[in-house]
Image 1 (cartoon, one colour):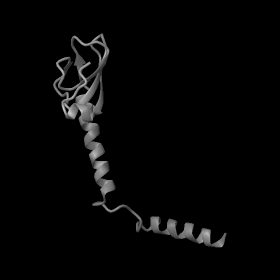
Image 2: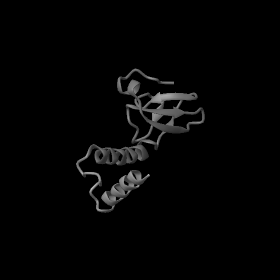
Image 3: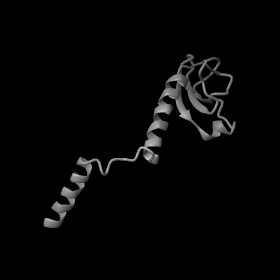
Length: 101
């Protein structure tokens, strides 16, 4: 058990001194920044509504999805009452392959 305690002690010491802290240029930091941009975009793109749509998923470029900040390559869920929810990026929407309902 002695060696295990030493390893834990060394790891805690490194973290305490900041030696094991992430590098600002490390890809992990870039992912965090990217997520922040995603959340901002999501808030803007989720302000949508649907016109003439039945329940289903629609890409942002579909005529049924409306809103000033909708994104063409995102998928949205429309309901029959005009409600809309943004789900985010979808590869088929990016390739203009639907869905449109």
